[in-house]
Image (cartoon, rainbow, N blue to C red; front, top):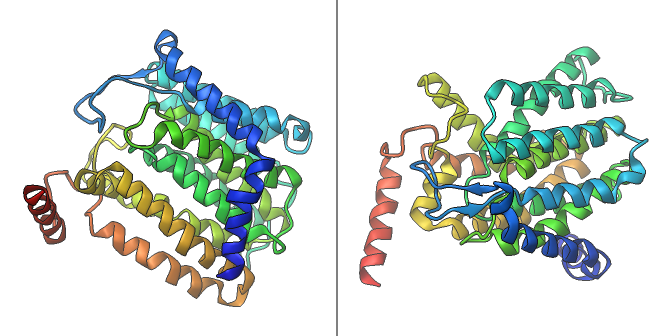
Length: 358
């Protein structure tokens, strides 16, 4: 843990000076977007599925996308499919932020960008007993799914940006002196940390601007792409991805699976994720802060341990993810909002009692 706390000090204090330019440019960009978003048609009007009560600027992800893509343009030749894919997925997200796109063009776009990443992987890390073509099929399905996972989970103030920040710290910690990756891989992780810090100033509850599909689909695609490219050097990154991203993929997978089985529309808006129900009880900032802190202080160190001790990687992964799984299950994800288990009912009564006393 001492090693990890030293790493956190380096990331959030020492390196902040080095990467301050990214932070500052993002702050200026987001300040401008907050002011001019209505003129661009980028405003989220509340409806019965919204957690906000007033019209709020959307499309804050534009700042994240532009800063990261333009800052790494020198690496275009190393992986043109990532940069071209980032542009396409972000443009589709921006169009959707202005006026909702039908599901089909969004899925087609996601399949194209993920397909390019998977097809052009120079090497697929060997997974014992699994043919290379099957690994690529699994990667393709996982990539399209994870883009949607990240988009689904961008539902309360501070969550998508804060999670991107904490996860990037975790991946850098796992890679450090353990996994060889391409230079642009490290560069993107570092930049995500400092631009999302800037974004949280505007997106922390109560949010002044939302990330929108522009940012959430870009981040989902980016995390998948960086993980897939790391597979060139070995499959260790798989364990870190499963652990670090566990809050998002577990909540989204359980919720969407249950909605599918209940014949609900998977891609329509709803409030049935575990984080939705937790936020309704405890407020946006408490839920986002809890998830960010658990990722920083539990999941990230466990992911490093799994990668560092590859013989123990599977049991460590299970041990790391189980508390997250049980925490999510407590809130009965995928069930109608009015459907409560005894734990939610107990928590509601406790919150009501505290509010009445105060």
